[in-house]
Image (cartoon, rainbow, N blue to C red; front, top):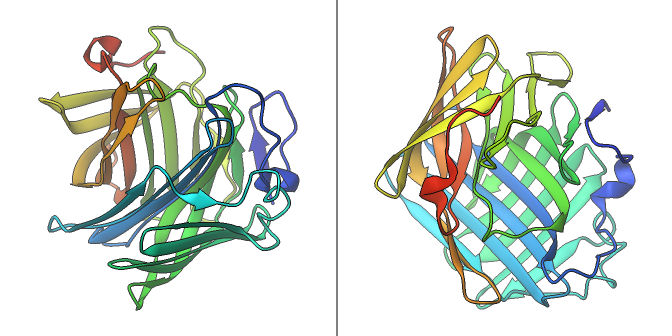
Length: 304
């Protein structure tokens, strides 16, 4: 398995497991997995966020359709096993969460290669596997890795075959201080693209990669991004991969409102999107335009 690690620390199969938490209240362990159908008619995502010091587990799961359908589960007080008890279980028994009317589980069946998600809820039933395509990409800025994937299984009992991405991160996650744009997609020729830019007012070597059809994952140098809005609603984005500018247009939103321990609010308008490259290729994926307080003044323009 090819691992492109842009970080300073090691990255390997053991990082699929939960990590020992630091002492900060907002130290967080996050598992995120998304999917889209090849025609962009159906998509969804699942996220499990563990705040062991805050004694919270956040569990989100959604399903969207091109015609505006939305099924959304967002539980910010999910029940889960204690962090230390679950430490060894990400690819043994799995990580399980339960709440009012649902039960979800995440299991890494083969580290860095295959992860399975199951969910049984009143209006949403998932049994999906994410199979790595091309390798694993480790961020340079934070402890985090992203994995482009083929996704297969069932959605509400019907067979699903599509594509998506999963990521795993650990460290302090303060949703209420920083805005960002994150995006990933698969194009119709089989290329996977990913890029992220935080709106911090200065240029950094932003995380970005591509996987060309039949090839291995590779870092993309010089990525930047910009965004446009219609009022508070994201209207689009431009992903400036050098030599491959890519336009992003939202299809269906699955937003979440986040409240801090002090009562601050942030909006997380995540959307399944259509992608169009300057050389005429197209595809589908997911983009997030994270909006904490004061987000309008944060820039949302290329930082290179």
